Image (cartoon, rainbow, N blue to C red; front, side):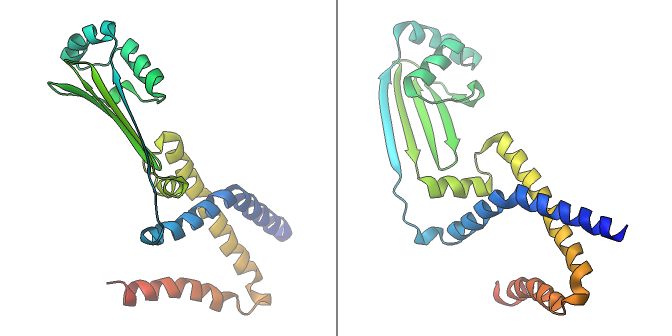
Length: 198
């Protein structure tokens, strides 16, 4: 029975470690890049487009502005012409223009559309793969699926840590350095937080 319990514990530990391996590596590396963000030089790539709205879409703008709703034909034309994807709910209406912000991990994009002239200005900024990974670390503009992944990943990490602790308890008798090393892992961040963070 005891061997069965240890076997189950080990199984939970290795399965949880396998599931969270990629995520732990990502979060560890991006922890370093976030901690040294000012030392890492970024060269954002900015891309801009100026277009004129077709006459048939321009004619429908006043009705859309009145309802403050983006119709499907305009929505599709914007996405196809600019090569981007965004939800119709992202549209912000004012008396004179339509503004759509399209933030994403590692960059952002936005457009303005003059409601009278139909002049469209679009700008997209890509800050590179480090900024992309850093934003994933923070869950910034990464969507619902990534948010769920982070929650599940955190739960798996807890399982990994707790099963590791229980395995330490089981093996501590034969390894006398177990608790001093474990205590040191707890004490170092605590002392830094209490004594060196102001």
